[in-house]
Image (tube, rainbow, N blue to C red; front, side, top):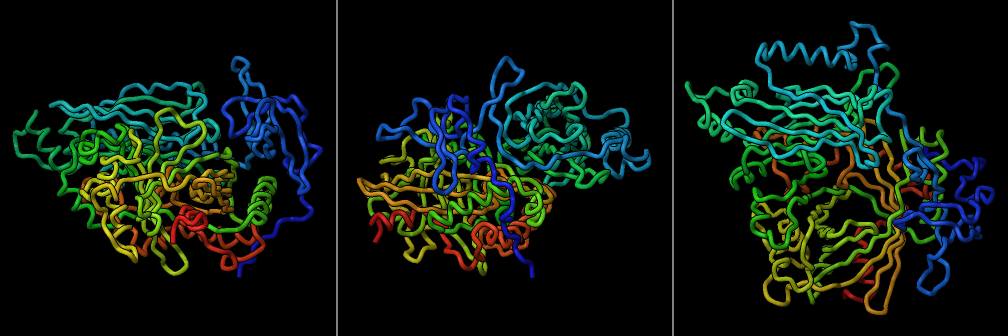
Length: 621
């Protein structure tokens, strides 16, 4: 039986609670919930030992100075780029490394997948497969892009097709904070179906020598080259436009995937730690669409289960849902779906604060992180979010556990209107999964007949509407989205939350998120506050072990993938056996006692804040 590690009582108090570490008045700082640098006006230490700061000119609703906890305040330090300033963020980040050619013998390089080994293998493959007629690849153009904060990703332009072949322009962007030592190692491949590699396009080395963290290149394939890779035999004499039509009819999609390799042990084999793109379009790019999928093709793809946590695709004219609802959906933005695997606990203020303190302490406690099998821990900026929940006048959604909301975060780009639905949940024993969808609107949903139509529509390509429909029709009070004024949306309640967040990296690139929320709902003059802690895997943008290793997915032999989940994907007990979910479950079993001093089954499960808050405010009966 595994015993959860306990916080060490003798450990050094982190700076956020140590009065000796208080920053002087007048210090230039960055405050996570404010968009511009500030200066400290005053400081204080609370009875619980927290350091808090007020900043010049920032007041609360009563006109008094507004106080910020120390973990939201970081001193600015000068950097060499024109006197700019950046905030130092607390983290305990594992240094990613690759095994280089110099560290192993020449005979080991191929097996260890060192840069030289991969490049040699790449050249040998090109000579063996293509001889004197390989695909054309432009020069690799490296450049610097400072300030990139997302996960490393590949960005692909829509392919250019003519009667000779296809051209694909690619851009690889690496996060400088997480680049491997001595440099990144990124093989790029062409794939079809469920991660089947067709060709090796290039081996990139961002950060090597004068190479920047960005690489741009173009690859071009003729249709004859594609038929060879795909093992297709066109009719004799088929060339030009006829060959193009013949190939595209059989292969509507390809994918360009970039994998970031690292070594888990000194001089170990370089292996995928993260990937972007591919035929599944991870990160919103990488899918190479040669033609739109037909409705029949989408339906055929629904016969196999999709077990990836996230799916999505940017909306353009080739998507039927966008053509139907182009007046309400933002072009070029994703419609994404997710299967959320998370544990949410209603804990009260005291337990909430205890968990936050424990996570602070964990940043400086390498021994406990090791016991918890945590490779890296990073404090994310604290977010202030405003969630506006919409419902019908009869509260048809919240009364059935359905959350239809807009989430607004401080600092959102102009025009952002993230509209999401939290749909049906399913339980397999003690484990719960939930289906969700999100998209970007360009109209206010209040009293909008077109947004109501989007929610009611169950066309094959409308994943958002299908998830709403599934939640309505499978509830204990089953119903369907109706017509008329009774089914137009209005604002039901508003929830403002402060979210303290940490990213936890486990083996194989699996990332779990810890979030501590203080959520206050208002409806008219009434208000109610919940204190919750969530530990979850499966939110959009996470790096998960199954996806990184290419072992998850539909298992379909079709030469394309569907860009959305369907309700049947939720009713899939195989989710329990995904390797990243098993890691998440094991972490949760030891992290929860560390945070709260109690086992999981001794905590109160939450999971639907909007419904709980609506009931507390008397909006549901």
